[in-house]
Length: 95
Length: 132
Image 1: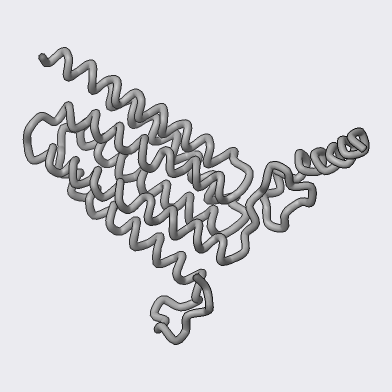
Image 2: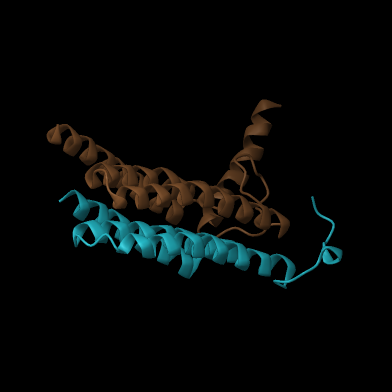
């Protein structure tokens, strides 16, 4: 029962994040929504593992946690430098 | 003993669900990128941590507990890093935050904010006249 409630809350969060990703005015809103969707997907995987009594889902969740961070940082770097493999000499003066 | 663990687990999972829904509503309704980031990090750290602690209580001492702790560790470290990078990138791209006492309307804000800020801009000069 409690896992059902948790799954419902996470699905509501998913829906809100998808709406924000669809209508976000700047690209950063979309990246933020994508990050939130990633974390919510991890939590949904864990909760579904408990609901179905199959804790193997947690391994997939661990992988998602790492991929989520790498994906967010890669997208942000792309929009900041226009390039994923810039050297130090390409650094635009910024603290 | 089992009853205590169950009650604690219920409490943690209900609190986590609450924080998750609140963060999602904030993500949907806040006026600009930075406030949305603030709302989303509520659900990403507090909500996720409370849910995971509730699940840990249900798991008991096993491999599942270790995996849940690793998941909690990752989420607590990667969430703030991603939010920090996002805020820095947004500042670098010159996205202006909406300020409470902003008379002029900032450049890049969502269209839903347009009406309230206009009303504020009208209200402000009137107040100044009243003072002087």
